[in-house]
Image (cartoon, rainbow, N blue to C red; front, side, top):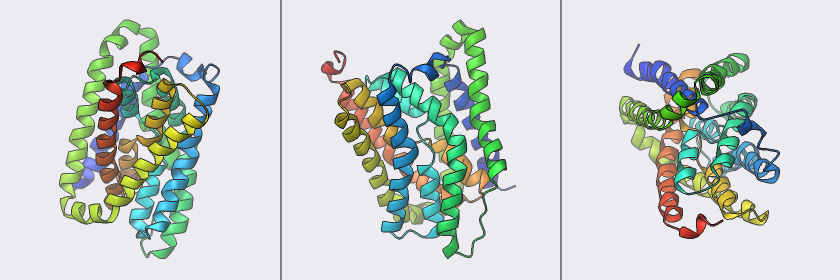
Length: 292
């Protein structure tokens, strides 16, 4: 097994499972019932994440005439809605953390079904123009996604319920560990495939930047259109534009066994941390957000 295969098939799925376990330790059943309290905001956020994000990604892949592998890689990213990173950024931006966590939690579970559906269509549409044989085993994909997302989250929630104080004490260490693990594995993936990185950035750099700005802009405009308060606007904006890059990497490298399909996620991760950092600086220093 090569270094790239070891990182993609072992360390990357393991890192995602650890991150999801940490997120599960921050969740309680009430996080999934907040749809009653924030029905308009929840519905809007999920629509942006699960419907408009893949549609925008698909449109950009066609407009930019991406090669099949890059196009499918972009669709992998677009099918993976917000992960734990969005919750952290929302917290720093003084957004509605409860809304952010609820959107992340619900989208994580719903995406078990939407990801195979979206990718099956993308593989059929873009894969038809290439000699590369890529197939998505739907049931295996669902099982693998459950194994690295739903099961760790459920275990984390069980720990939170049975050992509440321990879970609360572990929130900050797990958040830090999750970030460090993601960064280390992300660097390892890029290092193991450094020769393809420059070419990949040329191919996917601009389109992933536009995808990030477009989805964040859509989140902001739709939240304003539906007259949500500022805290909810911040949460919807971030949840719409910060995707679960770790899950996208796992799908590309471990499930579809194609490192090149992970390049768009690598480029997007760079952009979303830059734009997310700007939002943290902009909203973090605004005193009026606290009053909303």
